[in-house]
Length: 150
Ligand code: HEC
Image (tube, rainbow, N blue to C red; front, side, top):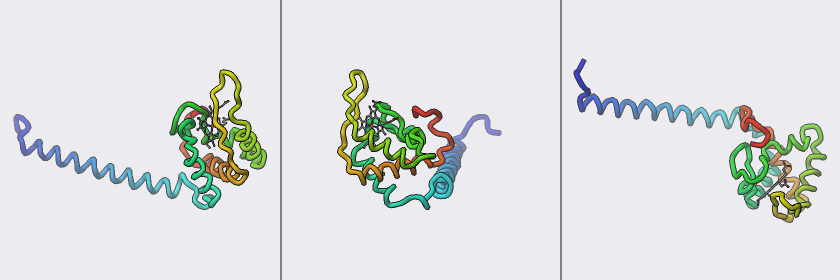
């Protein structure tokens, strides 16, 4: 074995290492893509209403205050699980009404509480939002985020 690392040896370590880890990176990317398409997301329940709900979510920048599955701002509650917390798994109509009432009652004006703006959503828009939150609550996230608060 050489006493010390030669230039050629260093180059081989560099290129070999880069290639090796690049291959791992490509494999993990491919696996993530496969996992999203086949395991974590249920495309069969991805209705036009869910897609419209996502656009409402984006148009009003709910993520600027809320987190969704742990991602977003930490000013307001996690909403990836709000459908389940509202009991939507047992009573979908009830959860939809709770969401409608909540959206209509903002801002609460309660002293000392953080405030959420009034978005003046139409009934259809609240239904779409509910569909989006319901669909999101069913994404298999491998138990992420680890608690209800996101
Ligand atoms: C400016 C910040 C802000 C934005 C933007 C915002 N929210 Fe909120 N939201 C809040 C705050 C603050 C609370 C908690 C208020 C409280 O507890 O009194 C909240 C609470 C909620 C709750 C109740 C959560 C629970 O755990 O009971 C829902 C549902 C909700 N927001 C939906 C939305 C949706 C949908 C949007 C986008 C259309 C949105 N919010 C945009 C600040 C915001």
